[in-house]
Amino acid sequence: MAIQSGEELFLSLLSDSHAREQHMAQFWDQLSQNVQDPEIRNIISVRAFLTKQDASNLEKCFQILGKQPSPPNIQFYQSMADNFRRQFDSIQHPGMKALYALWAIRTVQNWAIGEYMGLTAMADAVGNRAVTNLLDHTLADKVDFVATTRDFFRDNVRQAIGARAAGRAA
Image (tube, rainbow, N blue to C red; front, top):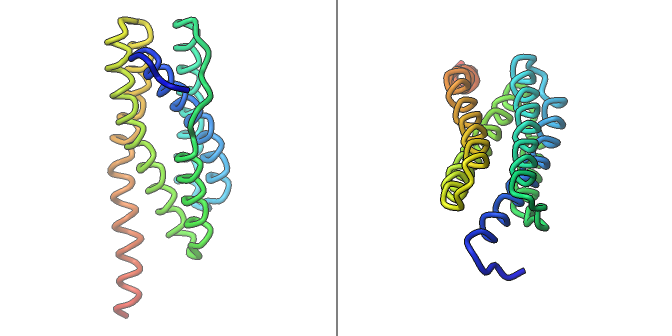
């Protein structure tokens, strides 16, 4: 479909983000079942839950706009999730699997933050304050998640890599 206007571009990107949220919610659910560390499994489960809420917020945006999502282009996201899955499956050590799962979440969340920054600016330009507020709320969720898991992620990296380095030195 040829995009002819800024509004069509906005709706196309919103559709892609909606499909990505749905796809990633399933991915996080599957990933959480394969992580042994209960604390990290809970973080991944919470991310899956919040991602489902984010998808719901995007559905509400379409309702407010009186539009339907266009066919999404999620090949990139599917490829990214497939790559994450392959890498995760190739890791043998449970602690390294958990660390990789945290890394994957942070990678996707940082990508999504950029998406939502753009979508929020576009919604504001389109002039729909309700949609802008919903997107802003979803953006804040992503930023908050990254901020609140920052120290936990760093501590787990130090612990996992430090233990592996100490084992090699011994």
